[in-house]
Each structure stands twice: as C-alpha cells, then as structure tokens.
Image (cartoon, rainbow, N blue to C red):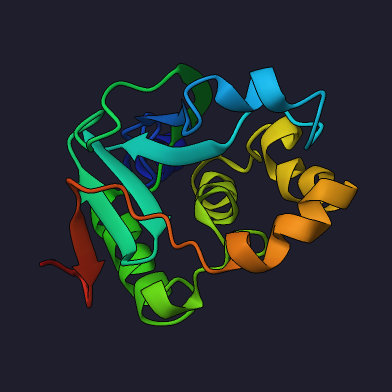
Length: 176
C-alpha cells in the first residue's frame, strides 16, 4: 500500500493540461468560394495557426511567429477547432518550436504548396495532441494543383510568401 502511494505521488496523477486550438482564416475572405467553381475547385485559401499556452503560433515567410490569439492583421479567426489537450509543458513546447525554427521551419523554407502554415500547424498539432488538423485543409494544395488553372497559376503562386503581420518571430528560443 505504501509503495502504491509513493508511486502515485512520484508520478503525478493529474498532470497539468493545456487546451490546444486550431485557428482557421480564409485569406480570400470568401472570394475563393465565389470563383471556385469556375477556376480552382476549392472553397478557400486557408491560413492556420495553433493556439496554446495563451498565444497563437504560426509559420510564414518570416519563419515561426507568435502573437496574442487573433492578434495579427487578419483579426479574429473565421473558425476555431478544438484539437484537445496536451500535457506538454510550455517550456518543452518553446524548445520544440525553437528547434523547428532553426531547421525545418525557417522563413526561407516556406513554400506555398509544399511547406506552409498548414504543414506547420499539422506537425505541431500532432506533437501536442497526437491529432492531425482537418484533411480539408491539408488537401487544399493538391486540389488546387490538380486543376488546369492551378497549374497555370503555380509559378506565380510559388513566389508568394504569406507572413501575417503582427507576430513576433521565434528564433533560438527567444521572441525577437
């Protein structure tokens, strides 16, 4: 009996849990839905961010950035998806983001179709909760590129680096 009490005391029975949300923004503000049947076959141009530990985290042409939730020039999100809870501490999470920001998610590695904000939020969501973001978001690039108009636009769209203003770039574990 004493052994069981020691074991449960040593390994916290109720670790701290943090809520994790996915913020979804339609950068086209509904225009993609209007033009979609004619040209691209998609319903939006989605930017996503992870909200955890009281901050919003996203990836764009500047690298990984953070701000207060809804604090970019995009304003409040169009949709909020509850991804669940995490037991990962904020300190471990910030170390993880710092590592990603120095390697995989540096600003110069941003690619609109292959390595973007949605790729980032999907990876971070899996790290924090073990869950992916909705496939209707992660599948958008391939849906666009599967259309003739998407193929025509690809060279132009590849040159676009989305970096919502209003965030602090995360680098080396520090906000800059």
